[in-house]
Image 1: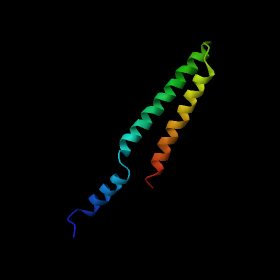
Image 2: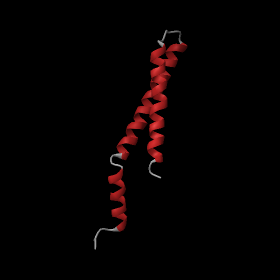
Image 3: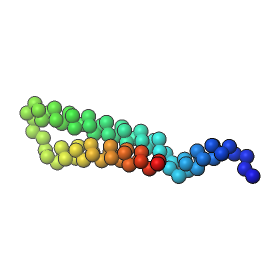
Image 4: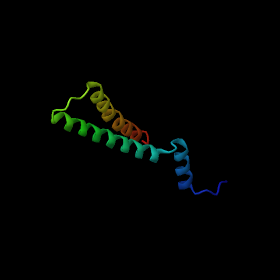
Length: 79
């Protein structure tokens, strides 16, 4: 019937169900790294005695929780 290799067909079907998966995972990793780096910088400023607003720390903590969890959830979808 079809002259497409079964392995190629399976790969194409999987890609059509989850497009841009690799790009999404790269973005989640980059955003997670940025969030953790921002939190580290904020904590180092706090350790030196600078005043920090609570809402800024909460935003950084939220990003540090959100982006790794999105990466984890995106990873588990493939199973």
